[in-house]
Length: 348
Image 1 (cartoon, helix red, strand yellow):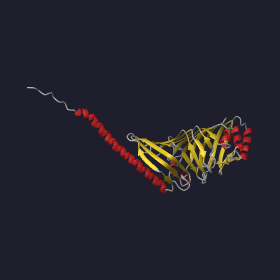
Image 2 (image 1 turned 90 degrees about the vertical axis):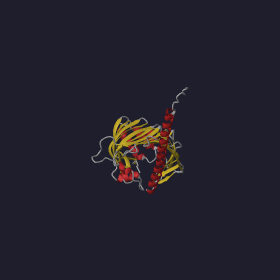
Image 3 (image 1 turned 60 degrees about the vertical axis):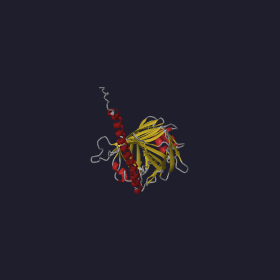
Image 4 (image 1 turned 90 degrees about the horizontal axis):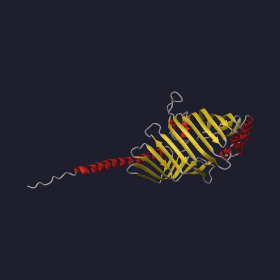
């Protein structure tokens, strides 16, 4: 009797492919759910801002990136605060890994237009304009904004912008890592700002201060009452924060303007009701006379009489060496000693 050879089951050959198809199907279901949540939350957040008086508009919003990314592609974007400040861009792309949806990277590949309330528009172009947000499930997320080789071009009718270009501009925000600066104050975040090799506009204060060189600065601080930075009103989020007692503490930084340098520190800075900075900043300056003398020759809101007086007083105290100076923001003005140099910086 002839015995037929035993046929082996091929189920084992198909099993890995079946498992891959099942995994792919489950992953696709998760991706579709995530993409729907992204689009839904975009619309909800936009409507929430509109209800608070903001203008939020985009011509098209598309979601893509399957299978491993979630990408939100927005065109014709414009976001305007009740205060009149606004940002617009022909295109913004926000992207996150599908397995890490609390970390997003946002890129403005076609540049931005910044609208300064009552001052007009300035276009910002550069080698890279990007922002990232990490830890959306935290009370305070980590935020990073990085502009690589930005170029600033004021539009017709707009006021001049302080700088024309820079090698880089960086801003970082994170939850406060150290102990609270004041007992009972837990709503704090750390901020860090870097301005790298910036060039001032023609005949402006930055160009005068740097003697046609470059300005590099780094400033860090702790922001108290950071929870009040959310609640937009007619004057903007910083106004609500200031009214709630918002302050900058632990301010530290370094500045290099041409051949002049300074290390700065302040225990407390805050904003007046009109948005002007108030407080005292201690400077340990190296060769400050060239920078102050350059300010005296520039325009752009700088008091030439006050700057010239400050330059003369600094020269008498040895302005070519290391000098301890006090910069005072008071009554809406910036003082170096008794000399009013310029309007105090305005936060809102």
